[in-house]
Length: 395
Figure 1 (tube, rainbow, N blue to C red):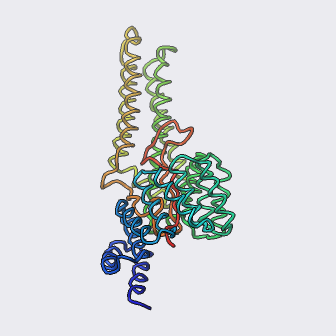
Figure 2: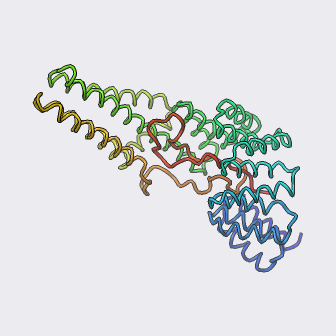
């Protein structure tokens, strides 16, 4: 074995272990000594991808492609990096070039499918995923990708079938577990979604994006609780004007509303696994959530007080103000939940678990945000880019 081969083997091992900076230092020396090694430049691109240096990854991949124009791997790496940079048209072009050079490799069809999803071309993505399944029907990552394509097209049952097939082929495929959680979330099964996210976190403890997904689900649940609380409060605000009730029953109504909201949240939390309940407690204690709850409850309390303690003759003028205060409280609370997470917030950066991460299989999908169809409350966490599935960037 030559010295170059040994150095490249060492670098590949480092990349597989996630030691991207060490691999980058080693590969920088290798490409300086052997600038004509296409494989060295490809591994260098993988190292840059792992360290989130996407522009550098594109440049390294292009150097490899210039050395070996007939090799598909550099184009696949470039496509991956270009997707992270948001250049979806070029990412799709690079993916198509990799497929043209190696149409019999299932990896190139997976690359086209993920680039097509990122470029909002679901039909092209579906066709590429189908071809990948034809070429590699027993490859877990192919079914993982196919499930993401189905989910992007709104086919929840098809998405579930593909992810379950991926798990049948590889029971430790944490990416498929994560996707099953996202599918559950689309079906408004919060407890089921968290169970899948926890399974994914157990299977791959180093992937922080799974715990981040759990945090996002919890924040979505809090946002839904605020939405329902404010909606019912808006209805109750009209009771004095319509039914002319006394102040005491009106105050009791506010107390009952708050109590029922808290009880419904507790019931849902009790349905969650024990690990999730601990995460809920941690999340609820953060400044972000505490502020949002204080704004929502405080705004509604002010509105109820304004309606309850004004003379009946002034109620027609006070009621619109109370309604505006209530709506403003809900908007402010939701905005607080959507705000960027600070360093003390209960989440971890998505970093290495992002789509197309170079470590290969078991890559998670993106976090499940709140902008799902039928969601009345918006996103309570980071927005989900669900058109970027992970795909292997290994050769």
